[in-house]
Length: 314
Image (cartoon, rainbow, N blue to C red; front, top):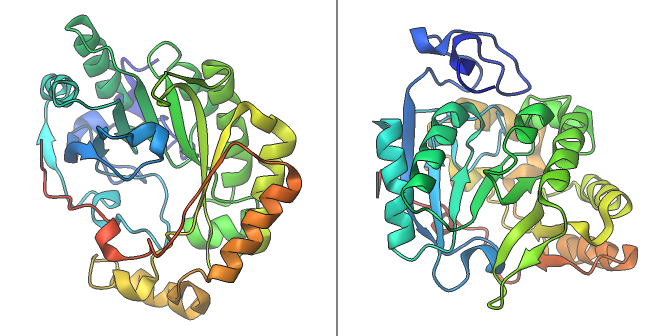
């Protein structure tokens, strides 16, 4: 399904139908050019993804969401990154494996899948043998996810919202809850039961991330309830408290206008998640019976958590 996907692009739920091969851009801001902002060992994923060696994270420019609190705005808007060929991308995968990466971690890959699939197949022919991680926003098309069977081993996916109105207001995607549900169903179908090696590194499975937003415990609890009631222990849940207040992001990105408007409408987004807020959501997860989960401790809501998108490794 990927061979001519750029010519009338319907790779994501936006279904913009633009001809990216001729230079047109859709919601993701990307034409048919492959642009990568960073390719390096990344130590800050979940322990079973990064481990001691690091995850081979490849950050693709562009995104099909417009989260007003985005900490990676520069690459999400496509303003950072280096243009490369699919042949170079294949080489990058092999270089990361040679550096000792525990896996290949494709960060926000959906809009570049035709080139990524080609590069993965080429790299596998040349010896790529570590797991492939699809690290996305959760706003993915189910049929596109289904087409990745046999290529992707692990899905590290967000589930941001159960509240469509909130999703529309904060990420410009009012249909996010239903889209994410269908996509996640395919992810679990493809990977099956979680599988780990003797070092505790995930080899196959699904990890669902939820970033707790300040003032939005109700949404977080609804997400947790849905995940537990639908999948139980078949998925791992990563509950994150690393939300970076937008006031800290103003100097980090060019998203000043949207940040100011969002701050007016959602003033709570200008602060960190409180310890109490996070503890209440963790307690709720325990009350539900969730045991396969990752939680964060300490103050991780700081700019130093954001990697430098300086084309390292590209």
